[in-house]
Amino acid sequence: MSVPASNQLPTIGDTTSSVISLQQEYQLGRTWARLLRGSTREYHDPVVYNYLSDTLWNLAATSQLVDRRLQLIVLDNPTLNAFAVPGGIVGINAGLVLAAENEQQLASVVAHELAHLSQRHYAQQLEQQRINQPLILAGVLASIVAGAASGGQAGVAGLSTSIAAGKQLSLNFSRRNEQEADRIGMLNLVASGYDPNAMHQMFGQLQRSSRFLGQRPPEFLLTHPVTESRIADAKNRAKQLASNGHRTYTPEFGLIKTRIRVSYSKQPADLIKEYEAQSQDPLSQYGIMLAATRNLQFDKAMQAYNKLPASFKTNWPSTSVMWNCSWLKDYPAALAKLDSLYQLYPDSYPVRLFYGRALMNAGKYQKQSAFTKA
Image (cartoon, rainbow, N blue to C red; front, side, top):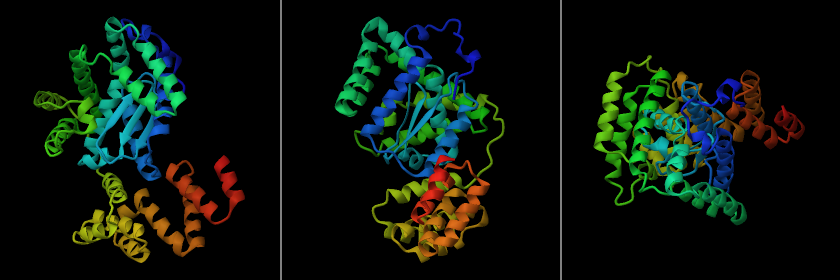
């Protein structure tokens, strides 16, 4: 996605571009992303990725970002973390969805990270560190070279260290960055139709949960410290903001969260029993679908699917599990359903991926090849 010419003009009073330009940030971010992908597992679930991507772009549309060439990376990690890297890289651990109580709280973290990017806090850090450490940018570039030579791990570690260099010297500066990201992120939440109270609610939940994690708090809290004063500031700001109308509730967040929880379960059979004890809850029926599919109990999975309300059955998270079950029992029928869905939603990432896989599994290689090139 190209940046409009009007957005490429320098901002009066902006001194960060003299340290590193938007284009340099973009190139740096893409190099860092390649190193990260070479050293860390991604969460390869098209339905989860599609949901998080939609959340990111919904917020990006109302953000203060000038350069919107974003790239989402979803990491296969059950711990709570999210981060933003110069150049439009946004990373989300699958565990962040597990930690959030609702879609609003998840969006508050994403909005906060986008605010770090829109305010160019990393460039500001480089500018601040230029005073104390003139070779900081050289250290960043050296880390990239080291990563290319060593296969990635050293470069990721070195680059993170270089960007964080001088942390003690710029502690107050970092606190200002966090406060600004909270403020700008909250404005973005409101503009996107989310509840601004979600931010302080998420902060409070993170603070409470960290008390039970021993001496090692979640990675997110190491880079985004949450204090009582920060929670109070976020709560006060939320009171002053008038929401543009909260988004209509959909079951999609709950389905995605259940999907991730089941994927990390080591005992799907025990999870089935837990969900069966709450069988009146549609999300529990969905959990039974997923856990039973993992346990190769396809009849039980289809029974749970048939018990879902109509509003749930039309969601991608539900229908994707149904496709897996029906594919194993009736290839032609499942392929026909996917073909009709592809005709209706040719641009849907999950539909395209599932349809391509189905064509390949059915031995329709020519059609699959033509479909992939389309």
